[in-house]
Amino acid sequence: GLLTGKFRRIEDVPVGRRETRFYRTGQTPCRHSDPGFEDEIFEFIGVLMAFCEKHGFSPAEVAMNFLKRRDFVQTVLVGARTIAQMEQNLASYEKEIPAELMEEIEKASEPLKAVMGDNADMWQGDGGRMF
Image 1 (cartoon, rainbow, N blue to C red):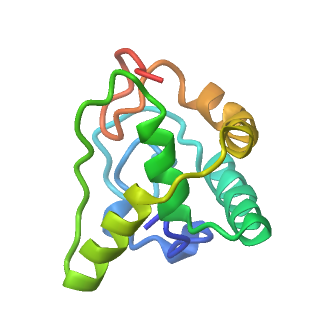
Image 2: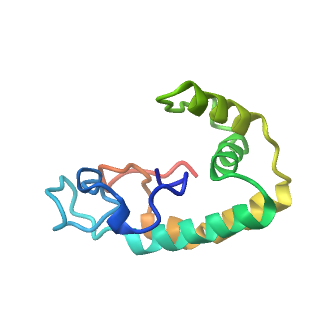
């Protein structure tokens, strides 16, 4: 829901989904001890949505292009509950976004990646980030 724009602020995220290290401890029972970084997440989501509106791309298209730009990504696993969502995922994967625009949004994501640290795992705070 984050990259689709479905959740634009912490109050939009269902309580049961706030258990990951992305969010502060104390809101729900969590198995992590990270301080959370929801402020940075939602700040970047705002930047991402403005970027998408400005350039005419969907957040799904930007996310797919981010993954396609990574040499080490061999497979992209996507979730879809409906045929329409699967069709959107396929169309997003096939869409090409110019490199200079992708570099712009990737640069805008640096503050978020900095607070995430070396691990993008949403459950555990230790480990190594792949991007």
